[in-house]
Length: 121
Ligand SMILES: [Zn+2]
Image 1: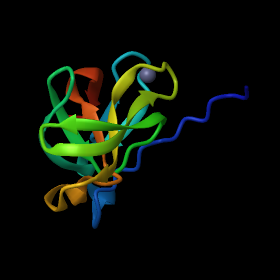
Image 2: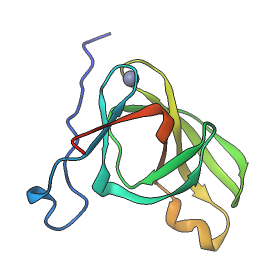
Image 3: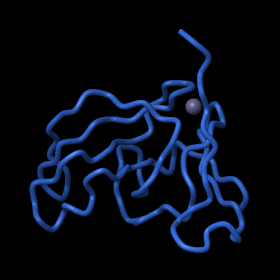
């Protein structure tokens, strides 16, 4: 195996993201960066370990196998996501939602608040 390539989180969140204070979520264990605060779509999700956030963009993760899972909001195809550096489980990615009202989550990521550190805020 080659050296791990670690990406830097862009402080994006759409228009005008460049001028903002950099607010980043990092791995609680190995401090690798995962996501920008400005890429949060919702803070109102429930994970395995408590509150979780829905993000539109996450880096430095690896994906587990896809599986069908019954969540609070119905059946979804999801895959668990892991820190690419230390392999801790972080949350999951929505691959497919079956309910029309849940389709906006497809391709989005859940990261558990309890598994992350905040930097810059
Ligand atoms: Zn890690």
